[in-house]
Length: 395
Figure 1: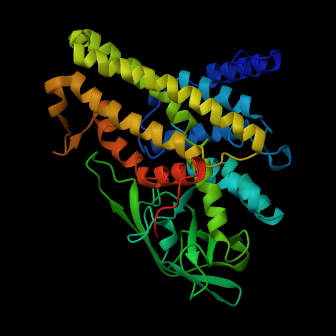
Figure 2: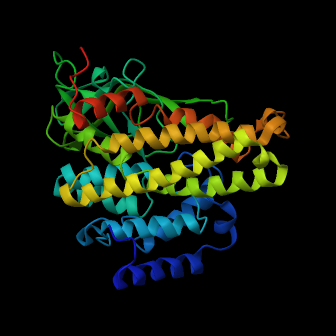
């Protein structure tokens, strides 16, 4: 792989830099990169920032031009994410809509569905959340118990989803339901698009040790959505859901992984300032963290090369997902070691609650990263069975 920009790529990089230089100012620049796609800090300002991105087609960058996108190739997508991250721009709000749902919609949706939903995502007029995990079907996604039955021209949904990030902000949810009553495992599932603002849907926040509550439980009690809001064939929702997870494990977290370089630079400066960088054990940890960053980078490039060749990310995406989440969890532990005694304290807010800084947030939140989009145990099974060709785990 040639990592030197072609003339066309260099021109595109210059365009991205120029746009960010013109618009990333004032309150937008003050927000900084934040703490990932679930960060709600400065929400209203971030919505306005996202609308600026959408107006100039940076939201929908890779979509076909007939749907309002730029039809950007993979190299251009990487360039945009590199420059966006290096500029310290705000974390994107459209992660679930643009990053997960839109590519799935483009792959499986009808023309009517694409024309209906894509413009609203690009204009940041409709936000999305992901209705996959359930209390008894987290990593075992095939154990879905939420059910939907067809009543005339509408699906009626009953059940519960959990760990639904930003459900309290979302206008729509892409929700996997069991639509064939006697089906089991991954058979008989359907991928439904359900409006959130209606009777029959209750959203309950789940407060975390970080102090935030962006995760939610969502209860469906007779919630309704139109018959035509099934994405892909009825009963074949497993295939559609796997496509969404492929994007989540593959390209969707590209910006987050690029941002890890900034996190490493921050903790290295602290280690040099407080003297912990002179401690042999911590020097080894920091060196290992740096080496992991390079492994992550080039493994990501290898995975993206396969995406270009085959047209999909494939099971190799599980290698990347397993590696970066394990690395980030270990990095959070290293950050606490660098902070030393300061790692044991947090700042009290005026209302008597507590606030965590960025490094504490990384340490706490990185544990969740090893669970969502398929727990590390699930990734190891996928790698063993579908990449290495080992015997299947006994069922």
